[in-house]
Amino acid sequence: MEASLSQEPKTRSAAIYDWADDRLGLTEIAEIAKHKTVPDHRHSFWYYWGGISLFFFIVQVFTGILLLVYYRAGADAYESVRQITYDIKFGWLVRSAHSWSANLMVFAVFVHMFSVLFMKAYRKPREFGWWSGLALLGLTMVFGFSGYLLPMDDLAYFATKVGLEIPSSIPLVGDVVTNIVRGGQEVTEVTIQRFFALHVVILPLLYVPFLAFHLYMVQKHGNALPPSEEAKPESERRLIRFFPDFFAKDMGMWLIALNVLAIFASMFPWQLGPQADPIAPAPAGIHPEWYFMSQFQILKVFGNWLPGAAGEFFGIGIFTAGLAVLVFFPFIDPSSQKGQRARMGTYIALALLLGLILTTIWGYWEV
Amino acid sequence: MLNENIVKNIIESEKPDEKDILSRRDFLGFSAAAIGAVYVGAIGYPVYQYLSTPAQRSAEAASVTQTTLDGVANLPKNSAMMFKFGAKPAMLIHHPDDSWSAYNAVCTHLGCTVNYQPDLNRIFCACHGGVYDPVSGANVAGPPPKPLTKFNVEVKDGSVIVSRA
Image (cartoon, rainbow over all chains, first blue to last red; front, top):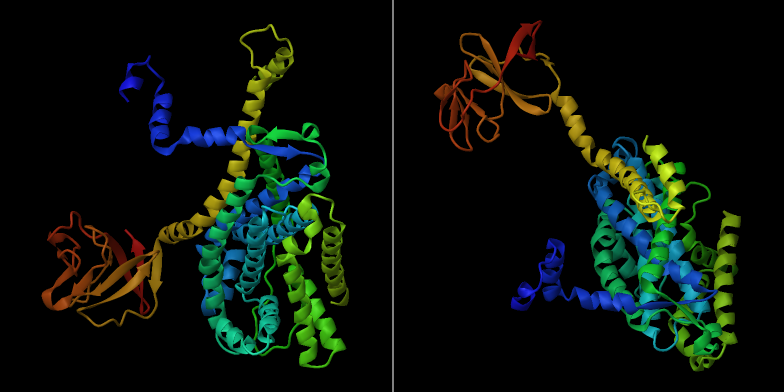
């Protein structure tokens, strides 16, 4: 401090910066940001999708906190959502933004995952980034599933009722675990209270550390190069500075994401159906959210092909196998480890993507 | 005026030699700030309205000037009943001499709800021991700085009509 005092007088803001810098190491962080680069090539567009997912997550936190101001879990849940939607000023918009952003987030996460698969960004040394990403994908889907029940309208009720049949058909432990999660054998206000605790406390508590780890991995290893770029000599590869160049583009993407969300949320307000009636028959065409449609359809198809428990067993077996393929992807694709173009990995990723899309379309076709 | 200036400045900023004009950089900065302000407003306004809805509702309720208490004219003498006047608790007292008083039941000290004690002939605030006169509402003992706000009372057809004085 003595030395700096003896120098020529600084502006006040510079003095405040120096004070904070001595204690927080701001200049070191700025140096990292200054030297951080991002590869620039014809597949660079896909680098933005993790950031877009993050943007929608931030929107979820923000709108979720706003909804917490009026939402009441338990027996009063439907009435409180009705108030938010029809009574509280702009409540319809906050709820609509939360629902739309949830769907857009799931979509962005899927795009991010498949872009990582096709660019082979799961390879050494990025396996942990891949696995933490899969965990975040799983948590995102549980977020979606648990949030869907909270308004307790008829669609929410039946989607949850049907959705919980999936874990309950897991051999041996399925029923016990599902009854604990559901808080009984039927979906009731007890279930709402549990899903609410899951949705606003337990899942965020799990999600945030995984997200922090995921971002740390990205920072540590940088953006992965696709094999087509790796094949080029270093001199032919282009880089752009992270700050301000990539950051500015990233923020531009966030702005586009915000505008898309604003259009969907305001032009197509999320609807609230009639209150769930536990003894009423399920309305026709009941189906889960689109991101569970593939699993739903696979279960349905196998249930029709194979009688009884065998159908469920094979249905669940299929998407458990799909999940296992994703988890072990860094190992089942050895040729790409050496930096060669790995056809096998691409074909498996393509098969997964097509299977997901086709079973989803098939599911909607039959609804 | 402002628009003309901006347009002029855009045109002039093409000429690098000119001084004292808005540069292209400044113009872009200004535009970005303006657009940013529009976004902040477009998000901030609904959020403000959303969060302040109950406050607005209770302000509307508080602006009530009169309330009718049906069928309470038979309230026994020397007793009181609590009711809601607008958003706030209020107290109706039927005195032993058949006269009536109504007060805003919020203590003028720190906002507790006061209580009528007929045996001690006083209105008492349990929080800090404030005492008011039940007939006039005057603050007679303890910390309250002001008398209770008194309402007009009119007995009509078995109902009691309370209105702002």
